[in-house]
Length: 456
Ligand code: GAP
Image (cartoon, rainbow, N blue to C red; front, side, top):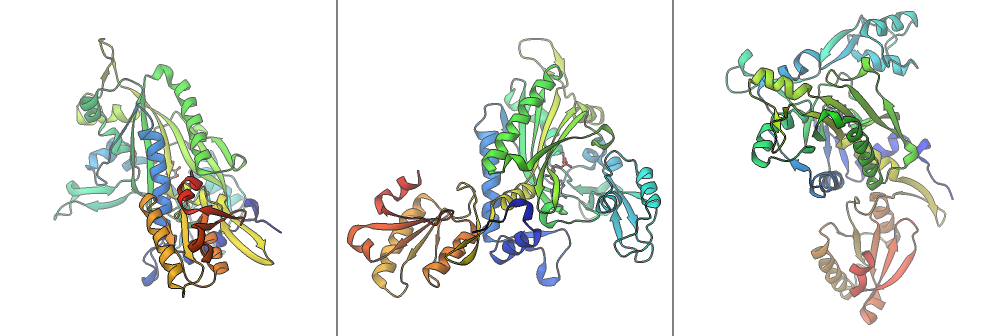
């Protein structure tokens, strides 16, 4: 008996399972792919939505201080000028002087065992020279320059400087620009939050590590508007909320690490940032971030739009621009962490088995229903009855009558289905079925009428 532990898990194993079993495919694969883009298959889309819906339930529906929005991806270019993204949303880029291939300078250093944390671009270049670091093709590297990661486009038929727009690099700005609208419609007491989920786009210099660093991805962000006097307490509360999130995702505590981001590495808007890192198959890396964004964004909006972003405390004349705590979650990174934490290999009856020990509330299918034999109409008919009944309650259940029972179990194990229900000849006599547990492989006989109860 052996078990793949997370420290032994290889990225290739996760990538290969995802492709084989219909979770994630390379974007535009049929045309040779488009770097940094990924398509979600039938199981990937369910897993991703389960994660996003869980987040929405936990951070919006279950709370009394949260409001949801869904803002447009394309926004007025002034948004990105005011937010500082046009000037400062940059990464350091260097070039292989022979092949002209481009790399992120901090990634080159990391790959050569040098921690670039806190280094300026000039210091990174110095480190490259001093350590004789070459490109992955073993050629000299150029000096670094900055590269803006926003995708530019034009809105409307005329492509000039006035029609420039950007694919949003963060969902946060769609929240800030609606702050005043939400206050005017609902007038919530401070502190309160506005949440948004949706696509974000970054022209990453070197997308890598599967979906971890993509050019198109999804974020789930909260801007929590506060009186600055209480920022430290509220920051701490959000830190705790984030650990509750890790728990519902089923992520082992020992694989999560906090990184207090030093000032020189923080985003231009942040006074304090904690990166929550996870032990991914490619190494320890950022899963999500939490920043104290102060009143940076609302102040900029007020300055550039000439509209007041002040908030008046109810029943008083006290007015101020609220400060913000921002927990910012990446969906793909959450999904990759969930898959990595759930990936297992063991041995069953002398055969190696791969399975995903996904938490039940995240698994793409809750149940798989099968007739023991496909060529016995009475078993198939009974199995269809059970399947359709369960499908009414849980939409995400599946039917499988291909191959023998052993093969069906292996298939369901690999996609993380927690329970397989088999209808056999005894079912026709006593209305009981076999329920087989994914993790223990233990089989239990259960009355059909108790199946729903069995699950509860
Ligand atoms: N509004 C703040 C913000 O966008 P960020 O640290 O740049 O902060 C937040 O991004 C989260 O978005 C990250 O912690 C990560 O989970 C996710 N993310 C950022 N860039 C990504 C990329 N290229 N691919 C996948 N996820 C990404």
